Picture 1: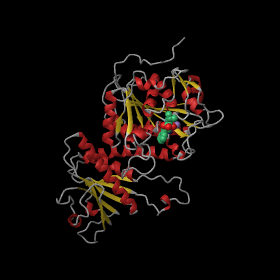
Picture 2: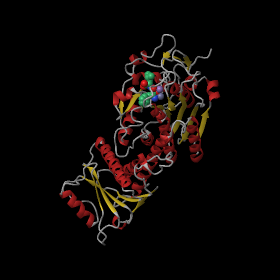
Picture 3: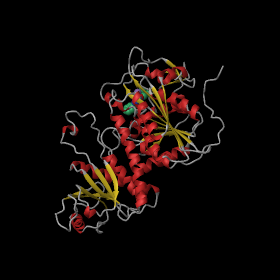
Picture 4: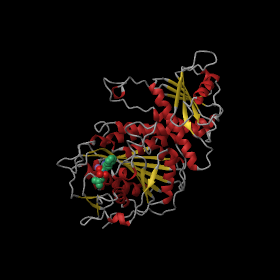
Length: 531
Ligand code: BES
Ligand code: MN
Ligand code: ZN
């Protein structure tokens, strides 16, 4: 799809669809240069059919005359009420309104099977041109996402319905907004949205299509293209290093495990910080010997969404090349399957840092693979902050539904930065506590810890498990089990995987606050003592 900026007058655009975004401005004239469009909208407004309310649309076919726009169709999309934002919260709401309107617009466009679109950037929204362009671009790209790779005979037909036509070109009409700012915003929006769509692609792949090696291949390709460094830790390396968590989960699988590491170096000075991202890359979670019920088990191909988010965010970061910051991403990846070789309840494993763990339930496998990756990554890269993302617990869906990411953190500044990034990107998080009471729930009679903490506070005890492996490095854990698919209903979020957290991570790195802490050698809590 071609995505470009245009300064051509909307009236002269002769493509399939011309889109205007209209604010709910009680009776005020419509901000449109074309008389015919103004008249049509005025009539629609007078009749109450279209008042610019959020989610409202009004599609019409202008008559062929010199006074009409040259486009075949004109679509007006309601932006809702836009007040001059006085607080950040209002600004974030405006950003989301623009994304939602853009999502609604491309839904309509797809329904009409249009190929070429011109979208006029709304002005006087209370947001800077850069932000308008960023959010509009995100909404348009995220909203027209479609995954049809596996449609064979029924290619082009979604849900066995009518034929689908893909949008070929979208041009953003700049109007009187600042061209340079709009261009910057569009680029930012495009990079982040493309990355989120990439994460959706990975997740949409079936378990037999997206195996651990696919994460490795994706990372290697990205590294070659953007000069990042990539390392893949293989099964025999894991054995040599004692990564008992990843190996244990992998025991029942015929696919070899991978620990994929991708490094972006944007910092030149010693004081430049390093942020470490870790994503759960479980390419299929059957539960293992503690087998899951059959109903809905196919959804567990999505159990790699944390890993997908992390590597896709790296794609956007690599394209953007922010200066003064280093980012290292780790994705531990394996399947979790039952077999005569599989891990059993009651088994005891030893993690990379020497911590022993009693396996109570083989379905609590995410924490096992993340624990090794966290301990290893912190030891090797001595990061200034660590963020892990995982579809870790069903319990987070009970607590927060499909509307918010569960956030647990040992560092308030890091938590606040993540909360702010989530609000800016329309991927909200909600913080839950950590504490010794919860850590106590995972103490084992026979080993150091056990991999489940009983019925209560399942999301927090899973985080408490991970906490055992991060030492004193500022750390945040995002439980995306409720949001990685079936995310809250939005015009720009299709059914299936949402690509959640990709844009939050990209935004977080863009707004990163803080230099490297003057820490001496990183102390690794609980690391194996040398005899
Ligand atoms: N991948 C699942 C978590 C999950 C469940 C994600 C439902 C999305 C929807 C994870 O590996 C898991 O099975 N967790 C268990 C933990 C339990 C055994 C302590 C769970 O949440 O049931
Ligand atoms: Mn599981
Ligand atoms: Zn899982």
